[in-house]
Length: 405
Image (cartoon, rainbow, N blue to C red):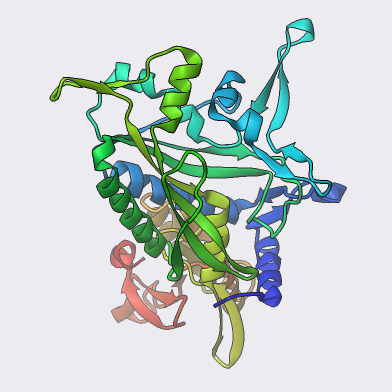
């Protein structure tokens, strides 16, 4: 259990910064608490995590519809949802501080006060009628969204764990009341499968004894961060709370008509809610590995290849030999047509390239050497393929490379 391991935390933060995963936001001006920027490898890792989520939660199913809702909405949305009156944290003096970011919409006397959304869910609920009218889906069905949310945290802390600007991957799954339990269980299993696909072996389920006011049942999926076991994701049975609240507040009927039974009712909702930043943090912790290879200590990220920022790196054995460089470029261009996250690297000697690619979590390295060019005729048009985890190398025909990486 990786609890209270400040040293591990510092190592991951240092590697993430030096290798272009995560930078402190506004660093040249001293930074800003709770603000971080993603570098090229962090952006790619985040992108691969969200792509995998979309595949497993949306594309692999026949009952899901994707949306991308506005960050700034009519402030009445947040009044109806209860955020204006109750979305607050206590200050030291006991007063309540609403953590929604206020913003002004419009100019002069016509300006109104609105908010940067503190969650993505409400955008889905207020579009429920639009989806029903446009697509006429049958229950059960879900709406999915990946997007930014904002909370003016009093004390953002613990790196990517608690930020003021964060990204969510969220589903609102609409179902008949009597079917909520089986659908809840189905989404619980999908979330566990997603954890395994990310390489998160130790995700713990905690039944929340006192769930939020809108929920009849909530499970927290917890992870062992260096500072202790904390919430990673949530799965909530939100009942019909949100659609009922928006029906009452807006005066618009958000019910569903079941053609088979002839009944009209407000659907109930199952909500799998996952934070991208916390997920990425957990992936970095789970993937971080220290071992010994070739008599030297090394540290590297042991990412599953499906989410690794770089799938493979292609090298010429020597960068001062034009014939090797030309062939390496040819192999690189061939591979990247089918696998976009392939890079070409000829910086430093071969040993340093291996170590650098290990550190950023690249699963495979492809080296073009003189045997590739036919110095040993039996090895013509083969390359050396090196495995990140074991350091083992094998000869592979160029035509078979794609299947091996």
